[in-house]
Image 1 (cartoon, rainbow, N blue to C red):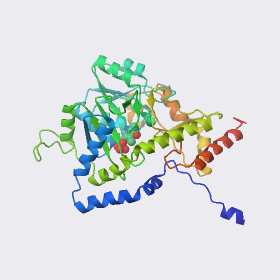
Image 2 (image 1 turned 180 degrees about the vertical axis):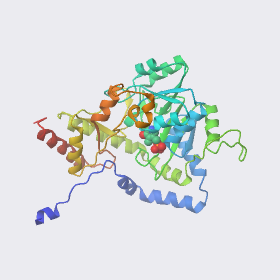
Image 3 (image 1 turned 90 degrees about the vertical axis):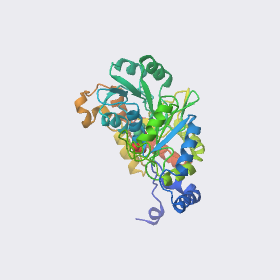
Image 4 (image 1 turned 30 degrees about the vertical axis):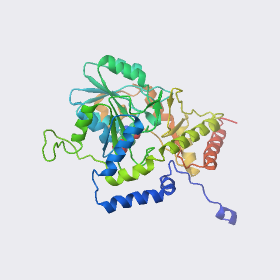
Length: 382
Ligand SMILES: *Cc1c(COP(=O)(O)O)cnc(C)c1O
């Protein structure tokens, strides 16, 4: 190895840079953590209450109830709505597993309908076709940060008397015709898993709603079904957001608008830089604000491109490799290969590129240059 090679630093670009995010607000975070540790009130203290109030205000709803994680946000909401054995819940197979898992966990049956090929969002027409007398709810997922077609979904739900539970775990801060993701259905569910747009330092979740009865029920469910304490009329869960997480998330929430703007700007930058390459870019509907939890491109040469990016020190990811209707656990539901083709193709060809508020222009250009070189080598472009 010669001198010039020794000094040449190999580039490493992560998919998401959690350490950079931490470093940018380290002092404020440590101060917030210290205050909680000093006070000695670690469960359901004032930080949790304040964080719930701030989220309710940010989303523009009456109530926000924090829980242990995004999965529990969905689970407790469905449970509170009385969904259980014999019921069907319509959702998308192109999402994180938790969306369907909670339906099955309560003894109900997930009914998978396909996505729009361009936006990855659940197809309203397919929802309508899948409704049966057993259908109780629809769970649209605002996938990758883009709100689903809430007008159409809301109309269908109203016509058939169904609940809409928005899985907004990837879409905090996104909006649809000016309405915040999470505020349009019976309830909206959020996750503060570290990689989400508002990520904590551990697990966390939130349910938002304007429905007072649902709010009251979920509040009881998250503390073992007790009301008052030590009196149990129903079975519940132990599902609370830690005081420490709430304090840290409050610090990060103040930065969220700025971070969201940076994500959108960097996504637009990818859009422009990749425009002349034979690579499919994300389709963003004009009537809604996409907050780019993930920036997904598509190519038929996905696996080769993934290998090439990794070899160049660029982290990239597959979201998601197996659509839920084809998961082993759901074999019993008998969805054949090819039954939901758009979801299957998305799983086959999609690839997430590095995107986070701290991503530098230089690193972003390097990602694009690497893709460009790949396309040239494959004979796909000049
Ligand atoms: C992250 C996520 C969840 C689950 O959230 P956790 O906090 O990890 O339990 C559910 N649905 C979607 C779409 C998600 O992205």
